Length: 338
Image (tube, rainbow, N blue to C red):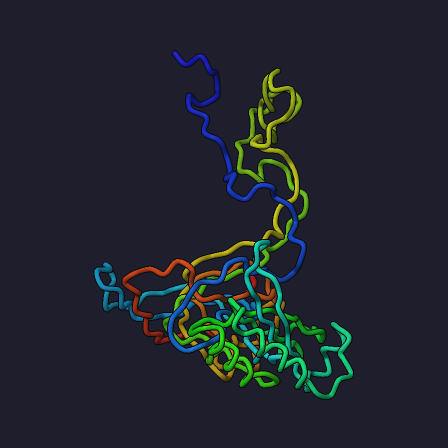
């Protein structure tokens, strides 16, 4: 006979403890904490995009061994607007006993005017001195990164102030990476220069914020019987007499959402130049029209619309690599209210 009354015999914990503490992110843009090592020619390892919305596409499944191999399948997709980046600076890093530290940097003499909204630009018209200093330190450099500015005026977010992002250059040695960075300094790079159709990317973004929520919504615990003492939307016990404090693992109310999250191995289905090809009739809800360059990823992406999403070269490459499904139809119909 069950002595636990209405309670189940087993009571597994609710919710994952993997991301504790669940506190708000400090910035609106996700911070890339890890850069993978890649081979080949020097190239940027990440590219940002603005989340426009989701839709669905009909594609031909080309995965070997799949039950739907060679057949048409309907897959969810996310459309990201990816205006070109302007490379404003180069920064080199070296290793020390205290970790990685900055050795020097070079800024472009021709930076976008909107950058004044974010930082105070220097009045120097010549950067030859800083270039010479940096080139002397290349033997000590362990990695090279570029400082890139987004062109938010080209999007439908309504934002004018650019984002300033540091992106690592991968492939080759430090001197090769510096020569590549020197070539693109002051110029634009496109998303098609970084990622190709069929590539896998990791998406890093800040999730949609939901404010302070109770333990039922935040942790997924069961609602107690309506005759329970004190509360029904809480845990039956927050702990014993010892230890004489509430443990971190007890589901409690608090901040939910607006966390940084990384999702691995999202497949790039399409990289396009004309956003009208991927914009539904009437535009995306809460975003509008995608006018310029865009990318279509398979599946969902963290964050609400207009959120900046960082797409990084994959840190956990799956072998063998999957063949990208051939897109045959992209739905551009608007949702009917009802």
